[in-house]
Image 1 (cartoon, helix red, strand yellow):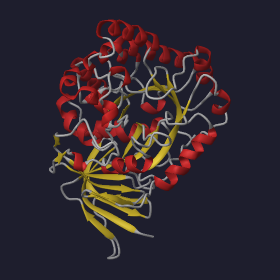
Image 2: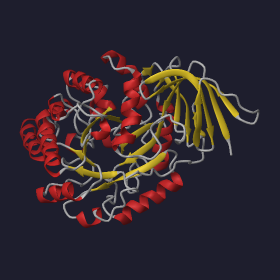
Image 3: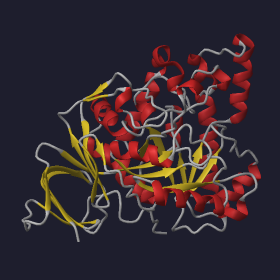
Image 4: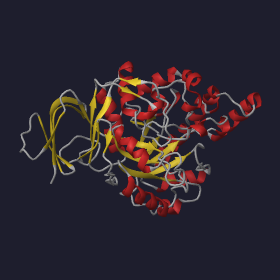
Length: 445
């Protein structure tokens, strides 16, 4: 059995920071101590001056396979993930075909088993008419149900109220919802189309995908969850107003309703549309600076439980289309962690809290077996961060198939030094191990 010793690391885990050693045997963390002595056969990484954290569990990514692989695929985007310290991901169902049957779900599992460089699972899409498929799901195999309560990339809008309530009432799986009120968006689109025609300026996006659209849909979903007893995770909260819908009085593992925020809503504001244009066109839209500040405050106060990337690549050519033909989404997974480490101190959020939101809480909310923590007996999914080695984002440095990033030209203060996946070094000092070692996530339900 191969063994690896990480020595002298500044370990950040479960609210604590301490310097110590970690011994990995095979895929598993076998020992955590102030000082570990080993035989000469064990590989050693001297992590003096480096931070050691559990790998990020990104609960919302779009890797575009099958059917949209000109934008990205499981191989290319999972390479970018491990370069960014993301050791596990949950991928969304709005591929082509949509992941709305057991057959299509199993096809994606097979692709990832052969090609994923990071650990993986997939959301199962809910539609107006696939409740029978949802009832066939093995809860230990599927991350959860994804519902598009507002339209976005792909044709997965679920708008039949009876179908939505039936899903909420019929599954014990976590339901993750994209919440934007469709009628509000349609009304706003009509209003601004009458003013600008097809060439709506990108800074109007948050007026079309408005605060009111987000709040109305999130309120509907949270009220339905309370009425039915469903376990609900509201994706990509983007407004101050929505935060009133969430509580912080219970530990996260006892919450039936949880909230997620994405890294781009924690970095960009509506002031950035002038410079970056459609490169920061997301659904929900990037909103005001006061919304951004409120999201960081909600992280600190535990009203928001998860931070994700919502990695969603499109080609640069697609992003140059006019407003209604320009897809929403952008590539994020390679720089989510280091962007959070740069931005969080500005809002009084410590690194322990960031780690809780990117690793511990996703593991708890989705009941992921033996991941998300630095614990003896758990899988060794670990990330070493060099806080004194800046990262300049250039096109050449990107691993995304789409070949661009909204962060291009920025320099972050830290860098991902090493990523360890299931006990193996899969990324180190800018180089990828070219063997895909990702494993399927298992859920303890």
